[in-house]
Length: 171
Image (cartoon, rainbow, N blue to C red; front, side, top):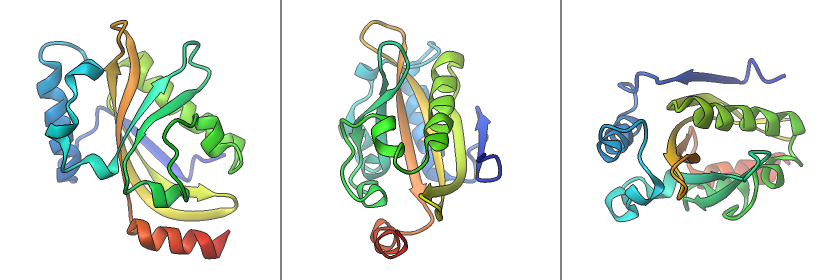
């Protein structure tokens, strides 16, 4: 499947990525003594330096899918359009259903184990290995007080403009 394409690590050392480390420090500050902060603890104004690369994903009630509640503007070119409001299935099923399941397994792990998960690999679009990426995922409590949202940051090896240009020529 995608074992050679994606690597994940729970509760990783982030010393090699200052942006991830800074976001982790923010998340730790907001959670205080709890396992994780609530979505309501997260303030976009306090995270302005990260916003373009951030996303928030919400688990649907039965955790059969996840909806992108926010997708940062720097991420839009990687997908070719703003996928805010779309489900993981809607975003990735045309690419490869196996990739949908891979994304599901990572998101479910973040929420069920309450772990910070770092995922690195090659972004696949169709039959193409599109770009190398690095991402980090933090669990958040939903309004009901249970793990139900994920705050994530995605960084690609290419600028979004270069990625969009490459995607247009490769697909």
